[in-house]
Every structure is written in structure tokens, then in C-alpha cells.
Image (tube, rainbow, N blue to C red):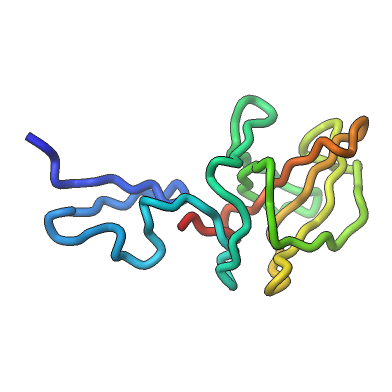
Length: 138
């Protein structure tokens, strides 16, 4: 017997859908055929689920606290589009040893998205840490 219930993991928030009542493709913010991340504020496309990148312990999801005490949940990606660098590269207080960090905002709406990380020894080696609460999976 096939289950009529379907679990959808939308950005780590589990939603139980009764498929006998609705098609998940018709629900706002849910498209099980496409898997990309957008800015939560303006909905510009930033990256795709295929670009999730495991770093520091074979995980793509991390929680860190900055020196000011603010906690951030971030997802790491190898690629991000539609961003603007708003700081100089910094090595101090990096969450990923051996990497500089640069603050990045959304190019369209200027919302803080997270950080771009560049390897200290090879600046062509980069990845992005995007704040989970600032992006949506659609």
C-alpha cells in the first residue's frame, strides 16, 4: 500500500502533506521539481542545492557564534550568485581556520546573506556560508 502522506524538508523544517488533499507543487514556496535557494527578502536566485559543500567535519550545516555573541546557522556552498562583497577579507575570528572571510549582501536588496570564504594560501579556493534564516529553498 502506498502512503498518501509525503514529508517535505523545506530548509530543515518538516512539513507533513496529505497528497490526497493537495499537490505540493501548488503550495507557495514549495516546488519539489526545482531545488534552488533564493534571498528571503527579494527572492533573487542565489545558488542551487547541488552546490551544497561539506566543510569542517563533513557537514554543510553549521552553527557559530561571533565575538559579539550573535549566533548564526549557516549552510556552505561552492557557488553563489547575486551577491555583493561589503567588507575586506579578514582572517581574525574566522570560523574556518585557513580561510579569510568577507561579508556579503544580496546584490538586489542589500540584505545580509552571510560570508564568502577564501583560502589564505590559495585565494582561488572559495566557498560561501549563507545564513539559513536569510535564504529559502524553492
